[in-house]
Length: 245
Image 1 (cartoon, rainbow, N blue to C red):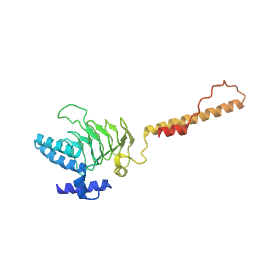
Image 2 (spheres, rainbow, N blue to C red):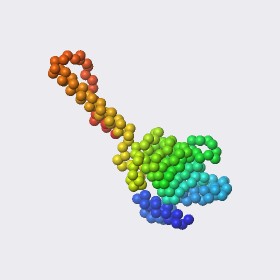
Image 3 (cartoon, rainbow, N blue to C red):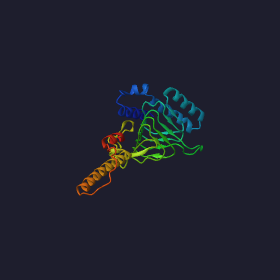
Image 4 (cartoon, rainbow, N blue to C red):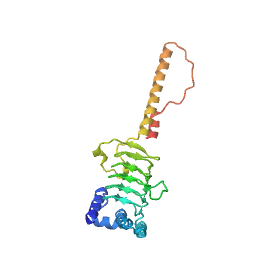
């Protein structure tokens, strides 16, 4: 138990530059306190002391602002940063070394009692602030969920998901880069495929405009008469690309 406690404290100090020492983590970090109380509640739950487990969970919610159902499975070195408003459902599984920020919900979309209803986060997953992960699916190892994303389907290992509904902006990365810690699930240089597609369409339209202008000049130089059309607004690619960014 004490080795687990030491590992949890060290992992928080490694991932939060504001954490100065173990005493501060134990006394001032609600995420750490919520997980400690969850371990007591979970032990009661699996030993059929259901009411006591729920009551400990209820006390933890009052003290920390974090609600973890006593039936949820929480791994080692899990860091709930800030934590206020975090909700983790009964059949949720949070793997080792995961990081969860404030306002996150690991929720269920089914009313079937006893069935798996909540998501599974594999090792090293990062879930950004305000994200909602809803359903009985798996988020793969070292995947990242961006802040305020709404995830309703599986996320592959090492991928980054953002948006509502969430879509993948990075996938098939190598294992080493996937394991790098990214605060709030923000991935440096993570290009959004939708943004890239829009940039491509804008640039393609601009090239077509240039080709049409050249064709009109060549036709006039050749003495061919072309019916005139009213001049429209010229495509402002710089402005459109800024809007997409």
